[in-house]
Length: 380
Ligand code: 4PW
Figure 1 (cartoon, protein in one colour):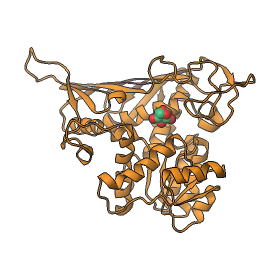
Figure 2: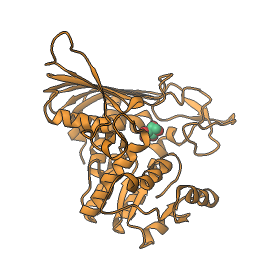
Figure 3: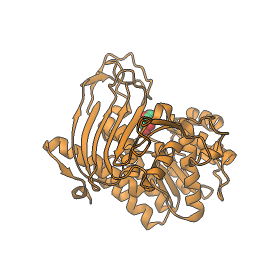
Figure 4: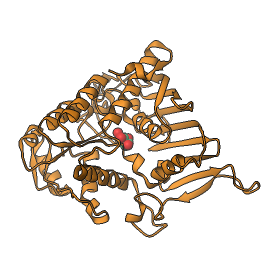
Protein backbone atom coordinates (compact mmCIF):
# COMPACT_ATOMS: atom_id res chain seq x y z
CA UNK A 1 0.00 0.00 0.00
CA UNK A 2 1.36 3.41 -0.95
CA UNK A 3 0.29 5.96 1.70
CA UNK A 4 -1.05 5.34 5.19
CA UNK A 5 -3.27 8.21 6.36
CA UNK A 6 -7.10 8.36 6.38
CA UNK A 7 -7.69 6.05 3.41
CA UNK A 8 -4.66 3.93 4.37
CA UNK A 9 -6.40 3.21 7.66
CA UNK A 10 -9.70 2.35 5.93
CA UNK A 11 -8.01 0.09 3.35
CA UNK A 12 -5.64 -1.76 5.67
CA UNK A 13 -8.43 -2.38 8.15
CA UNK A 14 -10.55 -3.82 5.33
CA UNK A 15 -7.77 -6.17 4.13
CA UNK A 16 -7.25 -7.39 7.68
CA UNK A 17 -10.92 -8.03 8.40
CA UNK A 18 -11.91 -9.43 5.01
CA UNK A 19 -10.83 -13.09 5.63
CA UNK A 20 -12.66 -12.98 8.97
CA UNK A 21 -16.01 -12.59 7.20
CA UNK A 22 -15.50 -13.82 3.62
CA UNK A 23 -13.96 -16.96 2.10
CA UNK A 24 -11.99 -15.89 -0.98
CA UNK A 25 -9.72 -18.00 -3.19
CA UNK A 26 -6.98 -15.45 -2.66
CA UNK A 27 -6.42 -13.66 0.62
CA UNK A 28 -4.72 -10.31 1.16
CA UNK A 29 -1.36 -10.37 2.96
CA UNK A 30 -0.21 -6.99 4.26
CA UNK A 31 3.34 -7.25 2.98
CA UNK A 32 4.62 -3.65 2.78
CA UNK A 33 3.47 -0.08 3.29
CA UNK A 34 5.18 3.01 1.81
CA UNK A 35 5.64 6.53 3.17
CA UNK A 36 8.33 9.17 2.76
CA UNK A 37 8.70 9.86 6.48
CA UNK A 38 10.54 6.85 7.89
CA UNK A 39 9.41 7.28 11.46
CA UNK A 40 5.79 7.76 10.39
CA UNK A 41 5.73 4.80 8.05
CA UNK A 42 7.45 2.52 10.55
CA UNK A 43 4.79 3.35 13.13
CA UNK A 44 2.03 2.88 10.53
CA UNK A 45 3.41 -0.53 9.50
CA UNK A 46 3.36 -1.66 13.11
CA UNK A 47 -0.09 -0.31 13.86
CA UNK A 48 -1.75 -1.49 10.66
CA UNK A 49 -0.06 -4.88 10.63
CA UNK A 50 2.23 -4.65 7.58
CA UNK A 51 5.24 -7.00 7.62
CA UNK A 52 7.65 -4.38 6.25
CA UNK A 53 7.82 -0.77 5.13
CA UNK A 54 9.56 1.22 2.38
CA UNK A 55 10.26 4.95 2.04
CA UNK A 56 10.14 4.95 -1.79
CA UNK A 57 7.16 3.52 -3.69
CA UNK A 58 9.50 2.46 -6.53
CA UNK A 59 10.86 -0.26 -4.21
CA UNK A 60 7.39 -1.86 -4.13
CA UNK A 61 7.41 -2.07 -7.90
CA UNK A 62 10.77 -3.88 -7.81
CA UNK A 63 9.80 -6.36 -5.10
CA UNK A 64 8.63 -9.73 -6.36
CA UNK A 65 6.79 -10.55 -3.14
CA UNK A 66 4.20 -7.87 -4.02
CA UNK A 67 1.26 -8.90 -6.26
CA UNK A 68 -1.11 -5.97 -5.75
CA UNK A 69 -0.44 -2.28 -5.20
CA UNK A 70 -3.02 -0.18 -3.38
CA UNK A 71 -2.66 3.57 -4.05
CA UNK A 72 -4.03 5.78 -1.25
CA UNK A 73 -1.84 8.83 -1.88
CA UNK A 74 -3.00 12.31 -3.01
CA UNK A 75 -4.42 12.42 -6.54
CA UNK A 76 -1.39 13.92 -8.35
CA UNK A 77 0.63 10.73 -7.67
CA UNK A 78 -1.92 8.15 -8.88
CA UNK A 79 -0.94 8.11 -12.56
CA UNK A 80 2.82 7.64 -12.15
CA UNK A 81 2.49 4.92 -9.50
CA UNK A 82 -0.33 3.06 -11.29
CA UNK A 83 1.42 3.06 -14.66
CA UNK A 84 4.68 1.80 -13.13
CA UNK A 85 2.76 -0.86 -11.16
CA UNK A 86 0.92 -2.03 -14.29
CA UNK A 87 4.18 -2.17 -16.29
CA UNK A 88 5.61 -4.41 -13.53
CA UNK A 89 2.58 -6.73 -13.77
CA UNK A 90 1.08 -5.77 -10.40
CA UNK A 91 -2.68 -5.67 -9.85
CA UNK A 92 -3.95 -2.26 -8.70
CA UNK A 93 -6.54 -0.70 -6.45
CA UNK A 94 -6.50 3.10 -6.77
CA UNK A 95 -8.28 5.75 -4.71
CA UNK A 96 -10.64 8.14 -6.51
CA UNK A 97 -10.65 10.25 -8.61
CA UNK A 98 -8.44 8.15 -10.89
CA UNK A 99 -6.19 11.08 -11.89
CA UNK A 100 -5.85 14.86 -12.12
CA UNK A 101 -6.84 14.91 -15.78
CA UNK A 102 -8.72 12.78 -18.26
CA UNK A 103 -5.47 12.37 -20.23
CA UNK A 104 -3.69 10.82 -17.23
CA UNK A 105 -6.70 8.61 -16.49
CA UNK A 106 -6.59 7.35 -20.09
CA UNK A 107 -2.83 6.59 -19.81
CA UNK A 108 -3.53 4.61 -16.64
CA UNK A 109 -6.31 2.65 -18.32
CA UNK A 110 -4.10 1.93 -21.35
CA UNK A 111 -1.35 0.63 -19.02
CA UNK A 112 -3.60 -1.78 -17.10
CA UNK A 113 -5.15 -3.08 -20.33
CA UNK A 114 -1.78 -3.51 -22.06
CA UNK A 115 -0.30 -5.38 -19.11
CA UNK A 116 -3.43 -7.40 -18.42
CA UNK A 117 -3.52 -6.68 -14.68
CA UNK A 118 -6.60 -6.54 -12.46
CA UNK A 119 -7.66 -2.97 -11.67
CA UNK A 120 -10.26 -1.31 -9.47
CA UNK A 121 -11.03 2.23 -8.33
CA UNK A 122 -12.13 2.70 -4.73
CA UNK A 123 -15.71 3.94 -4.95
CA UNK A 124 -16.62 2.19 -1.71
CA UNK A 125 -20.12 3.56 -1.18
CA UNK A 126 -21.70 1.37 -3.86
CA UNK A 127 -20.68 -1.59 -1.67
CA UNK A 128 -23.10 -0.74 1.11
CA UNK A 129 -25.56 -3.68 1.14
CA UNK A 130 -28.45 -1.17 0.83
CA UNK A 131 -26.95 0.14 -2.43
CA UNK A 132 -26.35 -3.34 -3.86
CA UNK A 133 -29.95 -4.18 -2.95
CA UNK A 134 -31.16 -0.95 -4.59
CA UNK A 135 -29.33 -2.01 -7.77
CA UNK A 136 -31.11 -5.38 -7.65
CA UNK A 137 -34.53 -3.70 -7.29
CA UNK A 138 -33.78 -1.41 -10.25
CA UNK A 139 -32.48 -4.30 -12.41
CA UNK A 140 -35.59 -6.33 -11.62
CA UNK A 141 -37.68 -3.41 -12.86
CA UNK A 142 -39.28 -2.84 -9.44
CA UNK A 143 -38.92 0.95 -9.84
CA UNK A 144 -40.06 0.90 -13.48
CA UNK A 145 -38.70 3.53 -15.85
CA UNK A 146 -36.32 5.85 -14.01
CA UNK A 147 -37.26 9.53 -14.28
CA UNK A 148 -35.16 11.31 -11.66
CA UNK A 149 -32.04 11.10 -9.56
CA UNK A 150 -31.32 13.91 -7.14
CA UNK A 151 -28.06 13.46 -5.30
CA UNK A 152 -26.36 15.54 -2.68
CA UNK A 153 -22.95 15.08 -1.14
CA UNK A 154 -22.82 17.56 1.71
CA UNK A 155 -19.86 18.22 4.00
CA UNK A 156 -18.84 21.18 6.18
CA UNK A 157 -15.21 20.58 7.25
CA UNK A 158 -13.70 23.68 5.59
CA UNK A 159 -16.33 26.28 6.47
CA UNK A 160 -14.03 28.02 8.97
CA UNK A 161 -12.02 30.57 6.90
CA UNK A 162 -9.06 29.75 9.17
CA UNK A 163 -9.09 26.11 8.06
CA UNK A 164 -5.69 25.71 6.33
CA UNK A 165 -4.91 25.21 2.68
CA UNK A 166 -4.45 21.39 2.85
CA UNK A 167 -3.71 19.22 -0.21
CA UNK A 168 -7.40 18.65 -0.95
CA UNK A 169 -7.63 22.42 -1.64
CA UNK A 170 -4.72 22.68 -4.10
CA UNK A 171 -5.51 22.16 -7.78
CA UNK A 172 -2.04 20.87 -8.69
CA UNK A 173 -2.33 18.10 -6.08
CA UNK A 174 -6.03 17.27 -6.13
CA UNK A 175 -7.32 18.29 -9.59
CA UNK A 176 -10.58 19.80 -8.34
CA UNK A 177 -12.27 20.43 -4.97
CA UNK A 178 -15.71 19.19 -3.94
CA UNK A 179 -16.23 18.08 -7.56
CA UNK A 180 -13.51 15.39 -7.79
CA UNK A 181 -13.42 14.56 -4.09
CA UNK A 182 -17.09 13.96 -3.36
CA UNK A 183 -19.23 14.56 -6.49
CA UNK A 184 -17.11 11.78 -8.06
CA UNK A 185 -18.74 9.38 -5.55
CA UNK A 186 -22.24 10.59 -6.49
CA UNK A 187 -21.34 10.20 -10.18
CA UNK A 188 -20.23 6.62 -9.53
CA UNK A 189 -23.45 5.95 -7.63
CA UNK A 190 -25.50 7.40 -10.50
CA UNK A 191 -23.69 5.40 -13.17
CA UNK A 192 -24.12 2.25 -11.03
CA UNK A 193 -27.82 2.74 -10.36
CA UNK A 194 -29.26 4.85 -13.19
CA UNK A 195 -26.88 4.55 -16.16
CA UNK A 196 -24.50 6.49 -18.36
CA UNK A 197 -24.47 10.29 -18.52
CA UNK A 198 -25.25 11.94 -21.85
CA UNK A 199 -24.75 15.64 -21.14
CA UNK A 200 -24.12 17.94 -18.21
CA UNK A 201 -24.21 21.61 -17.32
CA UNK A 202 -22.71 22.85 -14.11
CA UNK A 203 -21.58 25.64 -11.84
CA UNK A 204 -18.73 25.85 -9.34
CA UNK A 205 -17.94 28.32 -6.60
CA UNK A 206 -15.04 29.07 -4.26
CA UNK A 207 -16.44 30.95 -1.27
CA UNK A 208 -13.19 31.42 0.65
CA UNK A 209 -10.59 32.62 -1.85
CA UNK A 210 -7.51 32.39 0.40
CA UNK A 211 -6.55 30.41 3.49
CA UNK A 212 -3.65 30.08 5.94
CA UNK A 213 -0.76 27.94 4.70
CA UNK A 214 -1.01 24.40 6.15
CA UNK A 215 1.62 23.08 8.62
CA UNK A 216 1.59 19.66 6.93
CA UNK A 217 -0.21 18.17 3.94
CA UNK A 218 -3.18 17.84 6.34
CA UNK A 219 -6.35 15.81 6.76
CA UNK A 220 -9.99 16.64 7.31
CA UNK A 221 -9.34 18.02 10.81
CA UNK A 222 -6.11 19.98 10.09
CA UNK A 223 -5.25 23.18 11.98
CA UNK A 224 -2.69 25.91 11.29
CA UNK A 225 -1.43 28.95 13.19
CA UNK A 226 0.14 30.48 10.09
CA UNK A 227 -0.62 34.08 9.19
CA UNK A 228 0.69 33.55 5.64
CA UNK A 229 -2.21 33.24 3.24
CA UNK A 230 -2.44 31.12 0.08
CA UNK A 231 -4.90 31.26 -2.81
CA UNK A 232 -7.54 28.51 -3.00
CA UNK A 233 -7.79 27.40 -6.63
CA UNK A 234 -10.39 24.62 -6.38
CA UNK A 235 -14.17 24.66 -5.96
CA UNK A 236 -15.71 24.73 -2.47
CA UNK A 237 -19.01 23.70 -4.02
CA UNK A 238 -20.23 22.36 -7.36
CA UNK A 239 -23.70 21.75 -8.74
CA UNK A 240 -24.76 20.25 -12.04
CA UNK A 241 -27.70 19.03 -14.06
CA UNK A 242 -27.53 15.76 -15.96
CA UNK A 243 -29.38 14.25 -18.88
CA UNK A 244 -28.87 10.47 -18.69
CA UNK A 245 -28.70 8.35 -21.87
CA UNK A 246 -31.91 6.56 -20.78
CA UNK A 247 -33.78 9.87 -20.60
CA UNK A 248 -33.67 10.29 -16.80
CA UNK A 249 -32.92 13.73 -15.31
CA UNK A 250 -30.29 14.31 -12.64
CA UNK A 251 -29.83 17.17 -10.20
CA UNK A 252 -26.54 16.99 -8.28
CA UNK A 253 -24.95 19.09 -5.56
CA UNK A 254 -21.55 18.61 -3.87
CA UNK A 255 -20.35 21.06 -1.26
CA UNK A 256 -18.03 21.42 1.70
CA UNK A 257 -20.09 24.38 2.93
CA UNK A 258 -23.32 22.71 4.06
CA UNK A 259 -23.09 23.51 7.78
CA UNK A 260 -24.14 20.64 10.05
CA UNK A 261 -23.63 18.00 7.35
CA UNK A 262 -20.48 16.03 8.15
CA UNK A 263 -20.61 13.34 5.47
CA UNK A 264 -24.11 13.67 4.02
CA UNK A 265 -23.87 11.45 0.96
CA UNK A 266 -27.50 10.93 -0.04
CA UNK A 267 -29.86 10.56 -2.98
CA UNK A 268 -33.40 9.84 -4.12
CA UNK A 269 -34.37 8.02 -7.32
CA UNK A 270 -37.91 8.14 -8.71
CA UNK A 271 -39.25 5.69 -11.28
CA UNK A 272 -42.64 4.98 -12.83
CA UNK A 273 -43.36 2.17 -10.33
CA UNK A 274 -41.48 3.28 -7.25
CA UNK A 275 -38.83 5.37 -5.55
CA UNK A 276 -35.82 4.81 -3.30
CA UNK A 277 -33.90 7.03 -0.88
CA UNK A 278 -30.55 6.49 0.83
CA UNK A 279 -28.38 8.48 3.21
CA UNK A 280 -24.82 7.41 4.03
CA UNK A 281 -25.18 8.58 7.62
CA UNK A 282 -27.74 5.81 8.16
CA UNK A 283 -26.23 3.55 5.52
CA UNK A 284 -28.00 0.31 6.49
CA UNK A 285 -31.40 1.74 5.64
CA UNK A 286 -33.01 1.93 2.23
CA UNK A 287 -36.29 3.80 2.02
CA UNK A 288 -38.51 2.26 -0.64
CA UNK A 289 -41.85 3.33 -2.08
CA UNK A 290 -43.91 1.14 -4.42
CA UNK A 291 -46.74 2.74 -6.41
CA UNK A 292 -48.70 -0.54 -6.48
CA UNK A 293 -48.98 -0.74 -2.68
CA UNK A 294 -52.58 -0.67 -1.53
CA UNK A 295 -53.90 2.86 -1.47
CA UNK A 296 -54.19 4.22 2.05
CA UNK A 297 -51.02 2.43 3.20
CA UNK A 298 -48.78 3.81 0.45
CA UNK A 299 -45.63 5.62 1.48
CA UNK A 300 -41.88 5.15 1.93
CA UNK A 301 -41.05 2.04 3.98
CA UNK A 302 -37.72 1.70 5.73
CA UNK A 303 -35.82 -1.51 4.99
CA UNK A 304 -32.87 -2.21 7.28
CA UNK A 305 -30.57 -4.03 4.86
CA UNK A 306 -29.10 -6.62 7.22
CA UNK A 307 -30.93 -9.74 6.01
CA UNK A 308 -29.39 -12.60 4.02
CA UNK A 309 -31.13 -11.31 0.87
CA UNK A 310 -29.11 -8.10 1.06
CA UNK A 311 -25.79 -8.51 -0.80
CA UNK A 312 -22.73 -8.84 1.50
CA UNK A 313 -24.85 -8.37 4.65
CA UNK A 314 -25.17 -12.09 5.46
CA UNK A 315 -21.41 -12.38 5.97
CA UNK A 316 -21.48 -10.17 9.06
CA UNK A 317 -24.07 -10.37 11.83
CA UNK A 318 -27.57 -11.71 12.44
CA UNK A 319 -30.35 -9.57 10.91
CA UNK A 320 -30.79 -6.18 12.51
CA UNK A 321 -27.16 -6.02 13.69
CA UNK A 322 -25.95 -3.19 11.52
CA UNK A 323 -22.61 -2.56 9.82
CA UNK A 324 -20.74 0.72 9.21
CA UNK A 325 -18.59 2.80 6.84
CA UNK A 326 -15.52 0.54 7.09
CA UNK A 327 -17.47 -2.45 5.83
CA UNK A 328 -18.02 -0.82 2.43
CA UNK A 329 -14.24 -1.13 1.98
CA UNK A 330 -14.22 -4.79 3.09
CA UNK A 331 -16.99 -5.55 0.59
CA UNK A 332 -15.13 -3.76 -2.21
CA UNK A 333 -11.91 -5.62 -1.45
CA UNK A 334 -13.74 -8.96 -1.43
CA UNK A 335 -14.60 -8.21 -5.07
CA UNK A 336 -10.98 -7.23 -5.70
CA UNK A 337 -9.73 -10.58 -4.29
CA UNK A 338 -12.27 -12.43 -6.44
CA UNK A 339 -11.01 -10.39 -9.42
CA UNK A 340 -7.41 -11.35 -8.69
CA UNK A 341 -8.24 -15.05 -8.45
CA UNK A 342 -10.37 -15.00 -11.60
CA UNK A 343 -8.13 -12.53 -13.46
CA UNK A 344 -10.82 -9.97 -14.19
CA UNK A 345 -11.32 -6.39 -13.01
CA UNK A 346 -14.60 -6.01 -11.11
CA UNK A 347 -16.48 -2.77 -11.44
CA UNK A 348 -15.74 -0.04 -10.51
CA UNK A 349 -12.43 -0.40 -12.34
CA UNK A 350 -10.19 1.96 -14.30
CA UNK A 351 -12.73 2.03 -17.13
CA UNK A 352 -15.29 3.35 -14.63
CA UNK A 353 -12.60 5.76 -13.44
CA UNK A 354 -12.25 7.17 -16.96
CA UNK A 355 -16.03 7.44 -17.46
CA UNK A 356 -16.16 9.30 -14.13
CA UNK A 357 -13.27 11.55 -15.13
CA UNK A 358 -14.95 12.35 -18.47
CA UNK A 359 -18.00 13.53 -16.56
CA UNK A 360 -15.88 15.62 -14.16
CA UNK A 361 -14.09 17.19 -17.16
CA UNK A 362 -17.40 17.82 -18.95
CA UNK A 363 -18.79 19.59 -15.88
CA UNK A 364 -15.69 21.80 -15.67
CA UNK A 365 -15.98 22.58 -19.39
CA UNK A 366 -19.65 23.47 -19.01
CA UNK A 367 -18.77 25.84 -16.17
CA UNK A 368 -16.19 27.52 -18.45
CA UNK A 369 -18.47 27.72 -21.48
CA UNK A 370 -21.65 28.38 -19.45
CA UNK A 371 -23.56 25.78 -21.42
CA UNK A 372 -24.36 22.07 -21.83
CA UNK A 373 -21.50 19.70 -22.65
CA UNK A 374 -22.01 16.30 -24.24
CA UNK A 375 -20.03 13.80 -22.16
CA UNK A 376 -19.07 11.50 -25.08
CA UNK A 377 -17.40 14.45 -26.83
CA UNK A 378 -14.87 14.49 -23.99
CA UNK A 379 -13.74 10.92 -24.81
CA UNK A 380 -10.07 10.76 -25.86
O1 4PW B 1 -13.60 10.04 -0.73
C1 4PW B 1 -14.03 10.95 0.20
C2 4PW B 1 -12.93 11.73 0.86
O2 4PW B 1 -12.02 12.30 0.02
C3 4PW B 1 -14.74 10.29 1.32
O3 4PW B 1 -15.67 9.39 0.96
C4 4PW B 1 -15.26 11.36 2.28
O4 4PW B 1 -14.88 12.64 1.85
C5 4PW B 1 -14.44 11.25 3.45
O5 4PW B 1 -13.29 12.05 3.12
C6 4PW B 1 -13.50 12.68 1.91
